[in-house]
Length: 412
Image 1 (cartoon, one colour):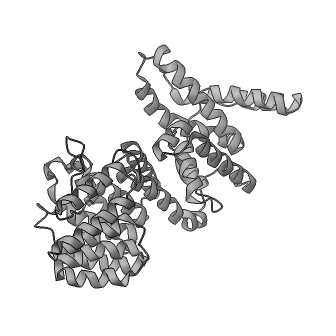
Image 2 (cartoon, helix red, strand yellow; image 1 turned 90 degrees about the vertical axis):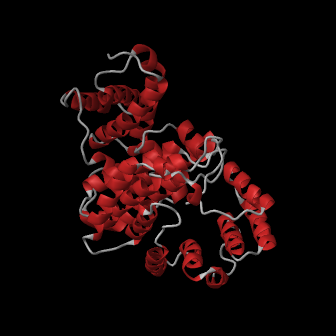
């Protein structure tokens, strides 16, 4: 075994090994719920033993063997002796060091995004089965009790088991049918990592990193799918600004005040290359449009030099495709820069009360009032935004704007 590693090093290794091990067991015909439970038990054993005893030369094979023993024990309790012996005999004919299939991650992704699962169940199941996170890690990341996450995962696994869907690379018709849900789940995981809904930090790097990893896997296996490429481009172009979004004192740094030297040029270059490849296929979807918007921001040498006219054209296309009130809210900020705050208020008024409980709606209203020189109205809107914000750092940022009557800054 190699030299012992830290617990964090072990955790990172297991995030790759656990999904691969699950794929091996599923290809051997094990039920999803049983195999996933066995892999998670093996992960817990690894977290306890690897930091002190060392990491095995083949981590995935080790996890498979430990999980396999757990399954044998389970079969010992639940099945007749002849069935158990047949199971052991069948395993004895397989390679001692199983290789993970390149299609396993894709198959797991599509399995976890089963049409019967709501995002509240699909997200934790994906984080556990595909990303290799433990139940406790997922609960910590989503700021929910361990028991809640465990219950959601258990119900999700039961639903998949009842569906009797086989574990294999999805056929083309299933990919086409379920791809939007798969991309949406990855997008939601990234959003929670990029702009956490609650907690003391504005970002959760582990979730953002896992979403990018999933998007890379999806793109690698569906490289001819322009929206999958556009999704990866979007995540990279957005995450490139991570280091600049929080100052050394822990305060949120708005987009117009960020030190762009801290932006990751490597991620921007990679994202732009992916976006160019996706757009060359002349099938522009919502993720490609969002990536193009992120690219305009990333390519601007300064906030003042942002090409707002180009952004408005992109937001017009995105609003037409998505019909999302969030998109129209973001477009209002762009309109304020191209046509002035009064024109932006027309867009805001058209939204009605659809976003009345959304704190960023009120922050945007405050921004527009500030641009119009209406300080009292801006302070009131910021106060409303601060009261509705659930993230501690963002709430403090908004409270500071309300108290100081300073202009709100975009925090994309």
